[in-house]
Image 1: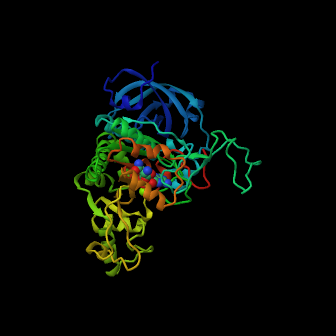
Image 2 (image 1 turned 90 degrees about the vertical axis):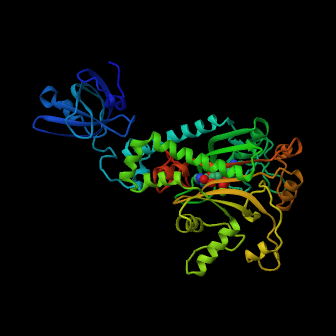
Image 3 (image 1 turned 45 degrees about the vertical axis):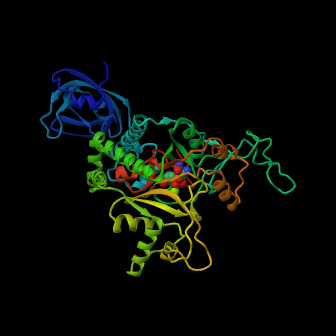
Amino acid sequence: MKRTKVIDALKCTAYGSEICVKGWVRTKRGGKGIFFIALNDGSTIKNVQIVGDEANFQEETLKRITTGACLSVVGKLVESPAAGQASEIQATAIEILGDCDNTYPLQKKGASWEYLRTVAHLRPRTNTFGAILRIRHNMAMAIHTYFHEHGYFYFHTPLITASDCEGAGNMFQVTTKNLYDLKKDEQGKIIYDDDFFGEQTSLTVSGQLEGELGATALGAIYTFGPTFRAENSNTPRHLAEFWMIEPEVAFLDQEELMELEEDFIKYCVRWALDNCKDDLEFLNKMVDKGLIERLEGVLKEDFVRLPYTEGIRILQEAKENGKKFEFPCEWGDDLASEHERYLVEEYFKKPVIMTDYPRSFKSFYMKQNAPVAVDSPDGASVGYKGSVAPGPTMQGTDVLFPSIGEIIGGSVREESYDKLMAEIKRREMDMSHLWWYLDTRKYGSCPHAGFGLGFERLILFITGMQNIRDVIPFPRTPRNAEF
Ligand code: 4AD
Ligand code: MG
């Protein structure tokens, strides 16, 4: 008999008809000769209730219906007398497809997140992870739909690369060399001539540089793929392998880039509210009571546009009024997450797009603003003392979110070959592997801009989960690559 998915069985009103459902036992209870099974097949957060008369089944079969066991059930669909469900199934035949004994690690309710990470191979079968993973799928669909509807082309950038986009050097090497017998030159440097690619290669930290090649040909592209960072950050917001969405658009200026960032995030949030209602309601009840209200709130807010220099002024003022920060926040410092969260959660109480950063901690490719003199009103207002010139700020546009911090990192790109080269020289960067990138500035260079959204950080926000390890099926973090 053809199987009906639980999600469809629950909607079906053809009472009296015979159907077959298959899934895993969530709970089984009974009494007075009647048993009740809550069966789930992953198609929805909801279980279908199976009701049966014990007298109609073998004792041996009934014993094997334990939490976690996999069943095939045939029965009559009936209107349910129980509250909260339209229909249930009166079982006529039950086949045990897979037994599940009492060593099953998910028997107890209320297991901690930490414990569930140790059984990541089974945790998708819990209600919470089922909800998170269905939402994750839905957000991927939202993202592809948004870009497709707005005329962007899905552009596939390589995962193996010989260049370091962000220039931070946190890359995983890719090699087929025998690590027990490395050939080195006189200076002790490893020789890569005989390696697979004939040069040193790594897993990419970002598809942006190749994305720019796409944008300067197709006009508007986006990437959506895994990226890898070997930074030793054991935080609730960092993964060594995460998914990133990177649109890159020709002829976009800073104002338009910010509009795109805001519109795109709001579209994703709206998609979740429209398409993931049951799962969000479950998470709102079990994980985070303010979740749905927060999601709806974001749709109503205009994101704040905040120049970095103004952000530093607000943070300094907070310090003067007694606010304690662990890390320094002088002009020129990269903001720590405590600073981002103060601005977003306490000061503005809404998402913030921070702009125009000092170049000290931003990437070489960002468009440079005209330099600000130290003795100008702008230079003075940032409290820049004496000898060191602030240098030009760069047209970054990072989006900071409540409870997440940085969710998007973006910028307008420097399109002037001369300015870009000057910055590369100033940083003493080795550009031998990036000659092709510089060609975009040599041949028909154009203004363009783009950003990177961390997919898991978006899922953190949408689900209300607190740890990034819990919004990806199999997290990769320092000292952890199991499953
Ligand atoms: O700010 P990032 O480093 O920007 C770039 O890589 C640019 N090339 C993007 C672009 O303009 N095309 O990273 C972008 C986003 C961050 O805002 C954050 O959401 C996420 O990627 N991210 C991480 N997410 C999880 N774990 C990590 N280790 C992450 N590092 C960055
Ligand atoms: Mg960033």
